[in-house]
Image (cartoon, rainbow, N blue to C red):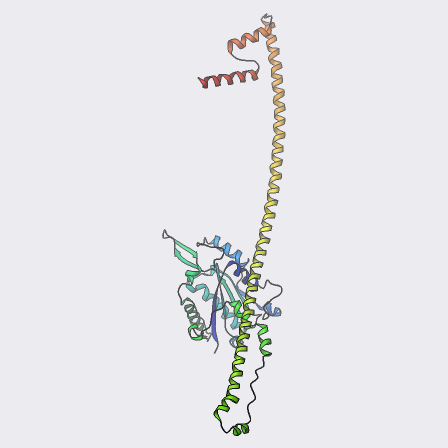
Length: 392
């Protein structure tokens, strides 16, 4: 009997970038040997992301006003992997396989009242050994703030609150999917199997570790030769000799093989851990490079924008200065003309009324009215008057 399989994994920003590259087939050279590029066109989405997972997250957080404290190492998304085994998918055929994943997608949308709008992507891979779906979502809980207002909050810990949260997920998924006509067994609880939950990508590496088979093929299990029955008769069933010559050599050989296999297991574990670390560092490197490229583009855009603004401001100031210079020249001409006209007027007044000296007339006018014909002198005089009043 086949099993209904659903697994959940938590993703940081770095993890999300790696999942995006794998799920959307963004890598040119796939490290996963299970991927058959000639079948990639068969893959489909129950929900297609328009941007990278990280950009989709930032967009949704702003658009839906999602609350919650997000740190650099926070789990900002989760990824469910939903599948069964090849025997099940071969039996139901392609169309029912597609329906299986579409129904699974509906289940996740409604699980814990999540909502389809918080699904980032749901990619179904048919180009690997076993059909499966990678469903990436933001773990949003519907709660209230301190003032009692309804809010949507990003909190992976509260979304999966409780020690049996994954057991509840598997029970609910099995009940739902069987109600849709897919007859599958519910997977055995971890308490019975003793299995350790691994990340999805780690499980793939462990089950497809290429060097394991090569090493195991080269192991030679040699048991000591079994003594001929006649030799045993010659010993006359001497118990001590039987133990020393037959049983003990076999026990020693078995122990020796056990120790060799134990060393082999340890060595393979080291290799798997090394692959895990290498992939983690590669994900971090890809994320940093992508982030740097984006930052570089932003800097170039800002430089171009400010260069354009600098040109506009410089042009406006030059234009303003030119206008002021023109206006200043015009004012100078007006003032010069005013001085000339005043001089003519004074001479005309003196001539008209028979005054001999025009300068004497000007002095009398300035003395009696405390006003100067020369505006510069007048301004200086008024300034002194103001300063004198302030001192008093």
